[in-house]
Amino acid sequence: MSAAEPGAEPVSTPHRYEQHFLTAPDGTRLHADVLRPTNLPEDAKTPVILTVSPYRSHTAYISAPRLTGGPSTDYLPVDAALRAGYTFVIVDLRGFGGSDGCPDYGGPGERSDVATAVEWAATRPWSTGRVGMVGVSYEAWTGLLGLAARPRGLAAVVAFEPVVDPYSYLYMRGVSWKFSGKPVTENGIRPADEVGLEHVAIASTPGRPDDSVEYQANAVYTSAECTRRYLALTGDHDATDPDWVARDLVTELRGNTIPLFLGQGFLDANTRPDRVFELWRGLGAGAHRAWFGQWGHSDCRFKCGTPGFENEMMAFFDRHVALRDTDVPWPRVTVQQFDGGWRSENTWPPADSRRSTVELRAGRYVDRGYLPGPDREIWSVSQPLESAVHLSGVPTATLESIGPAAATAAVELYDVEPSGRATIITRGIAPVEPRTEIRLLAQDWPIAAGHRLGVRVTDVVDDVWSHAPSGATVTVTAARLEVPLLTEARVPDLTGGGSEAHAKWRVEKTTTLGAEVMNNAVVPMNLVSTNPPHETGQR
Image (tube, rainbow, N blue to C red; front, top):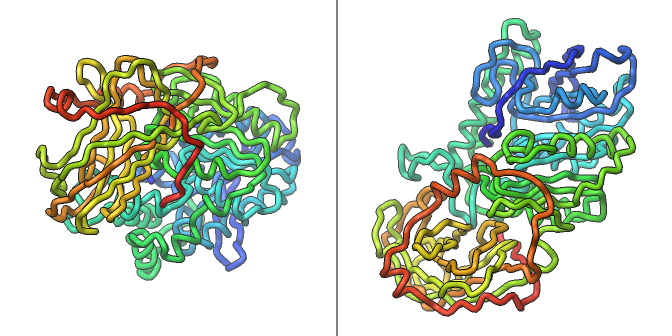
């Protein structure tokens, strides 16, 4: 995973800083940085906020050099925690920072590390025994690993833009997500290999001269066998491999009751809005919260366009970790829809989201990969909508197709203005099969009256997936789209603005449809939500 979006800031709250080593059950030595508020006695017991991470080297945060040394606190709410009377603990995952051992990409070793870190923090003389976890991206993933491990002392987790299933992070139905922007064939390096190589490089980051002997020795330990196993896993396209199945937290966290504050940006191009909503819907009874909206790979402390997130996050920790009385009536789910409005919901997708089925045009396209051309796509557009509709949930498409399994079928959904300007709502992809089922990414998008719904069927979306083209012709004999629509109109009831990612999407994710498409690709689309709720669990 790459870095989260917000800017870094130094810790300005006075604090005491300590380093420790702890030992996992298999003998792996883990390094911990501990920051304690100085306005409390040294032996004062405090609640703990913990981050377990591959990115917290004293030398570099991810790949950015750190000049000052000491604890790596970039992008973490350390100041807010210290001001509120928490101890903040940062523990390096095995193979990273000052910890030894082999990274295993969310496997049993890393799960053990998280459990060890939580139980260690809960049993220190300065701890009340209650620990909350916080993080974005990989550091949110480790929070979910904590929920799965259920160590003693874990009281709550805040996880924004998490990996919930590492296979789906790297692949959509076996097709590689694009990370670097390079074609799949350039230098023979596949996107998943790039992720694996990045993490191997991070794991090899040396320590600083002022670090302890043990820290420096652990920092550079990366054996050839560690690297081989790591790259073998991240380069594995087979979703049924037991190693991938064992790492699927969507299934494992069904029924979880430990309070979880979950966040996901609909516009996140890194940890995408895919299976995270399956995880959300599968949680058990508990004081769970969520923020879903129009931002990228970030928590909402800086980049979501609305104030108040840090207060809500700290109130969540205060209630569940510090056991303080915080009866502020926050909504269970905060949603930002694409038109910029912010609203409260009890769940997402909302309970009144119903699926409307529309038939699409048949036709042919050539699986050409990165070479543009009109023979790469089949368009369908609706008549102008007589009234506004509100898409909220996960659209799905089904294609009856004739073509080789080496070819792909991608579906893009557009909001088309009367001028022909079309903005991408969402997209999805799958290998071509006689019956190709495609789950698109989730969105919450009001479509105004007078606009049209546009659907493009193609081989691959060049800026989203990497795919070696087959050169084959794919014949689509029938196609349909299921669109989740709200049955009740929404009036935004929360305040907030727009994010940088939202503004960029409005500009960059658009195209203009010509007269040929607008006039000749029209199909009847009766967008009436009458079907019962339905979500697919495809990986």
